[in-house]
Image 1 (cartoon, rainbow, N blue to C red):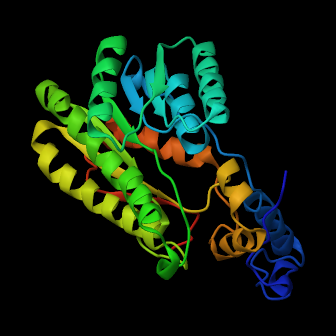
Image 2 (image 1 turned 45 degrees about the horizontal axis):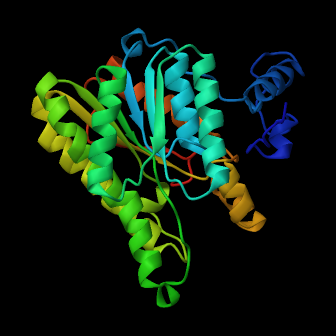
Length: 303
């Protein structure tokens, strides 16, 4: 198992700068070294603890064929929830990934409904929600995970690159919330989690469209929390930092990944499971009094 480099200077780690509080030479140093060895372990993310209130819940997840969305779907399925997910059909590779994700979910013996859906289209989003409710019986959770990027200096960014990112990341979430809100209001219960980003708070070069979409998603989260709160609907967002997904590792240059790792207080990149566990928590009754929050899942990247 990989170890994370300690932030304590080498001289202190070797006992030269630490007081000998144990009263015997070497004893305190050995105790501190043992403690450092224990806390320096970089463990793999663990699944969320059993959340009995989520069993048999109907969960809708957008963009769940791969990456973070897939991890969220599997996390809910491990807790016994019924899953409906969609994906943008832009080729055989993503269709195959969606089929594989559905197969893995069904191995967990939960009800699964999935199909292609372009969340940028309000009518398509509404039709998907209606069909998901019919297939699963009822819906209690919506996770807006669908998102894309098209990085480019803003003076070279095309109209399509601007619109596609805003329409998917922000308008897509609005379309899904608008479609499911009447159902949640009627049943006086619901949980909504939007997958935002640290770049909704701190941008970087070439991310004008992406950062604008995620900042807008944060605003949408707070507005929806205010409007749906009286109907006992919690609306929150998670803001991941750099998460190890195929899309990230295939597209983002290694030097940017290294810089993100160095900037993180935990000195590591995140795992999709890290995000999934927080999403599940926000949808459980343990988080019943949390709404309108933007929860960073960034390893301290924004510190």
